[in-house]
Figure 1 (cartoon, rainbow, N blue to C red):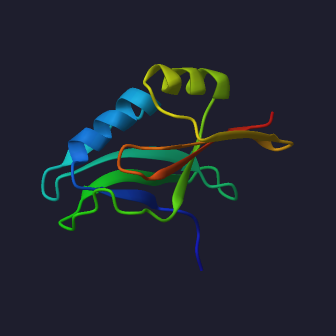
Figure 2 (figure 1 turned 120 degrees about the vertical axis):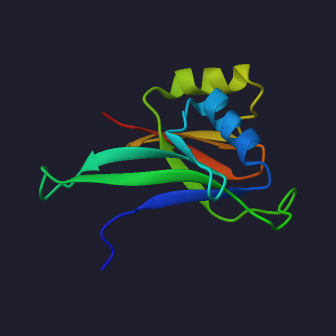
Length: 128
C-alpha cells in the first residue's frame, strides 16, 4: 500500500527564521516558497529501484502553524543523510549548535542535534 515517503513537514511559529537556521547550519537551500500558505520547501529527487526511468520526489517543508508551539515538546525525528559526518559536525559546532550524541555502527555514523524550535534531528553518514 505505501510506496515511499512523499514528504517531511515541520511546523513553526516563525517559518523564515527556522528555514534560515536549516540553510545556515545544514546547507538546506529552499527550492521555493508557497506564498499561499507561507511555507518554505525543498525537494529531493530519486529514482524508482524497480523502474529506474521513473523519477520520484520527496518534499521537505516548513509550514506555519497558528498554534503556539514555542517551547512545547516535539515528537518524532527526521533522519538526514550527510556526505561527511566530520565536516558536518565541525560546521554545526562553528554555528554554536550543541551535538547531543554521536555513535558509530557497522552501517554508518550517527549524530543527534535539535533545531531552534526543538525538533529532533538525526544525521547519518552511511557506511561505504
